[in-house]
Image (cartoon, rainbow, N blue to C red; front, side, top):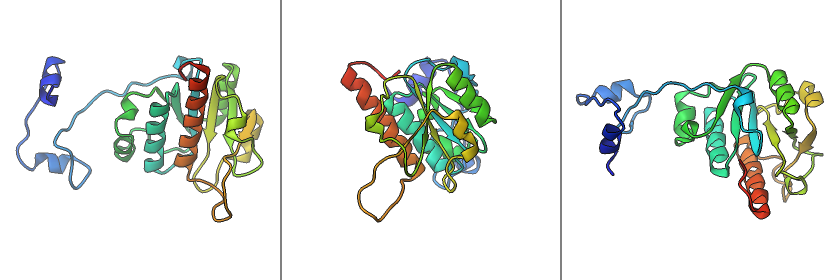
Length: 208
């Protein structure tokens, strides 16, 4: 069904713009031919499903990484994504675009304080797994079918060591060869999301 017909049937008001108006309103040089506004639906931590896995983004500052993580989280069936610390605005236009629509289908929480987030997740029964370049447990060696939170740190500095007391374990993705010592944070988060999804499928259930 054509997009305009679907929108019209849903009762959404439609306005046609004159040539050139959309180019001035959009934030890209070559925008898509449709522009929409929608209310932001805020969620609290205790509204996330108590099962499955969540991503916790602590001071993730690159909007492309944040959007990719949202996209991977939705694709793998995450129970939610939490933006905290000094992370990029979850509704930054670049985050929205790079999420490829996942921002509208993934439960999303924003909170300033990562300590409060991690304590709340721990109190709710989630095992908090911080990502680490080395000395952590390989993801396939962990039971990721239990309620877990993957805690991802800043692109340049990783996780603040002060958060270590709020983590239950560290997870490290094994790399082959000596050329690279770590993955891009969006790729690391994607690997963890789909390892969790694989384990859920192997057990015969859904991740969330």
